[in-house]
Every structure is written in structure tokens, then in C-alpha cells.
Length: 509
Image (cartoon, rainbow, N blue to C red; front, side, top):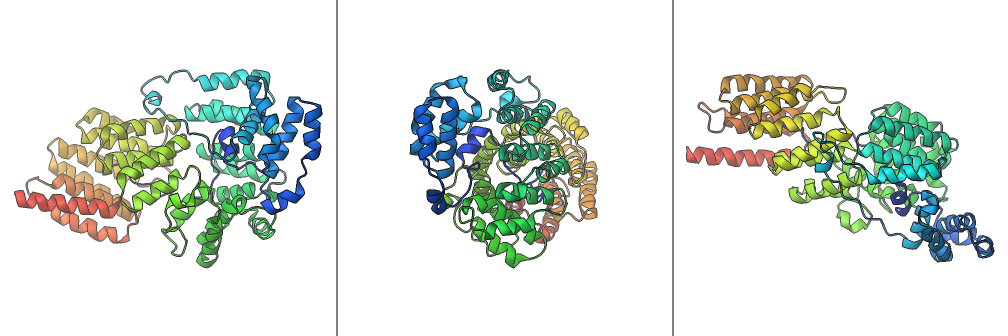
């Protein structure tokens, strides 16, 4: 039995990308409505200053003003000047200049090489890390550059080095939206959600920034704390001082808060507002919550929203349609976009082995997941299942010995027993196998986890096919009964596949 589909509660926690990508996705603009920007920003003064003094300092002033007003053409010459200097300017200014020249185009996503980051091989040197460290010698006080270095370290599983870079960035720029959101996401990655929440809460003026208020609410929910800025968030939504895109995550975060409080009517209204101009994060949240609340307008396809990097939402959509190949492709794109995150890696590894039967690919994905999440039991369970399914007994036993239950992952003990059962079946010891699977089912009952119980019963029944005195049909009926209270959208597919296998086996017998 592999680590099944992700069922931990989802919140609109901040995405963490490199600075250039974040700028180009429009998440660092001022956020004022376009109708007010035209009147509020006169670029004549900064343009004149640039024409008189063509230096990086004046170019930066004009580029920043142009980005706030969305008047890209006014700063094109200044942006071209900055780009021509290559490494002679700050990476942050270089990224802003690129934003001006490329308009609203989203940058391409760097493909993640799963094999090169496997845990059983030393990863090759990173030219990106080397280049970033070289730039830091020239710009040691550039907080943005420190955060980008932290991101590169996190992707390669160098957590201690990543934390050091994050803390330096916070000391240099404790009020910067990009730094604060990125730092919070890093500590969530480290399972220190309390620190992540404190970082946002202690940032001066965070209650006036919808992106930071959204993050504070989402991170507080993840930390099981009471959000400190929900009232201010509602005021920001009502103020008409921000464009609907810059309020999307805030609407989504407060909508999630209302959903958790049982106010489904308020939640639906807020999620509808979040979808007027969503980003990939708020769209994914709406897709996630729509499984629990009817009336959220996510019947439209993900493509119809025409947003950049909608991979997570697309993966959920494909899973709901049981379009498993598309689901895996979208999940791998999601993993490439958020390579340090365990969610896409766990989902991709599960889809590859348990749905599509590609144990080799699942193994590579799980090993990649362990690079950035070395203590995540889901990847060890998944590897154990892959090894047991392909006759690699010793490797399966090794992975099971590394699998440990932890807070929020109570299903792990049941999964360990189920995989011992799988190994016993494959070694021709059905009675021992049945004892292990029965223990797995009992443990799932003990923690009242219907999804785990159903999954264990399905895999147990599959192993019984063709065994003397087979219990497959009885176990199928038990799985069907347990599935009535389960929530996994993979369960109907797995039950249908199992039913066909048992029926075909009976005909052949």
C-alpha cells in the first residue's frame, strides 16, 4: 500500500519562487486599481531625472515608478540600459528591468532533473548557487539576493544553509513583502509554522498589505492559531484601494477561515470574489475547498481562467476527471514550480505507482522528494511499496524501517503493516500476510481513518486474487462499505479496477 493522495488541510500559504519569477507574475506590484493608477502616478519627473542622469540609480527610480503605474513603455529605455549592464547591477534591479521589457509574460519554468537530485547520488555542483554567491560578494546587503540563494539551497535539500540565508535577508529587509512571504514559506517547509507566523506578524505594517494579511491568516490556520488580521483584511477588501487580483489570495484566505468556522455562505461569497482575477494559489484553494462546499464557481476548466502556472489546480481537476496521465503531467509541472514542496512530490509518486503502475518513475520522484523532505514518511512508504511490488525485498524492508508515524501522519503505522503484508504475500506466506493486513485495517479503524482502511482493504483484496481459499470477494465488499465514508477521488477508480480483476479471475478459475 503506497502513500495515498494528499489529504492534509490546504491553506493559501505563500508560494516561494525566485525573485524574477515573482516579479513577472505581478505579485510585487503596488496593487492599486488601474483606474486610480492613471491619475495617481505622473512619471514626468522621474523620466526627466533619468534623461538628465543616465545612471543605474535614476534608471531604478523610473523602472519602479513604471511598474507601479503599469506604464511599461515609459521605462523601456531605462530597462534596456539596466539589462545591458548584465552582472554590473543588483539582481533585484535586473529582475525589475526584465519585468518592464517582458510586460506580463510569465517566465519559463526551469525543469527539475529528478535523477540528478536522487538521494543515492551526490548532486552535481550548482552553477546557479555559484553565480548567486558571486553576486553577493558584490552586493552583500541585497536581501533579495539572499532569499534567492536560500531558495536554491532549499531545492537541493541544504536546509541549514538555506535558513542562514533567510535570516540574513530578514535582518536586511524585515518589511519587504517578497522577503517576508518567502521566509514564512521556508519555515513552513521546515515544519516550524509557529516561526513562520511570527515572522509575518512582527513585520511592521503588515496589516496594510493584502498579500501579507492573506499570508498571516493562512499561516495562522496552518499553525492552529487565531489569525490576528482578519478584521483588517475585511477592511482592505472593502476599501476599494486594491485591484481584484491583489485581493485574490486575501479573499481566499478569509474564505477558508469562514469555511473552517462553518460559515459556508460567507465562504462561498469570498471564494467567488477570489476567482474574479485569481492567481495559481487562490485557484488551487478554490478547487480544493469546492470538494466540501457546493456553489463555488470552479466548474469552468482551469484553462478558462488564463492564469500563469495553474499546475496544482490542473492536477486536482484532472484527478477529479480520472484523467490520470494529465494529472501526473500537471503534478510534475507543479513540482517543477515548487520543487521543495512535499505535496506535489507525494501526489506524483502516488499517481505513478498506484494508478499508472510506473514503479521506476515513482521511485525517482519519491527519491527526489526525500532530497528536500528527508523526514517525510510518505516517501519511504511509497518506496517500500515500489520495491515490494517489484520483488526488491531487502530494499522494501529497509524503507519500512525508516518509516515513522508523526503528528498529522497517523496513517503511517497502518501503511507499514499493509506493506509487510504485501511482502509476505509475494514471498508465499498468505497466512502471515493476512495477519499484517488485518492489523493495518484495525489500526485504521482505531484512528477512524476510512481512506486508509479502504486503501488497505483494496490492496489486500488484490493480493488475494489467485490465492487458495481467496478472500478477495469478501474484502472487496468490505472495501466498498468502507468507501462510503471515504473522501479520496482515487477510491472509486481503484474499486472499479479491483472489481474487474476479481471478475476476470473468477471467469478464468
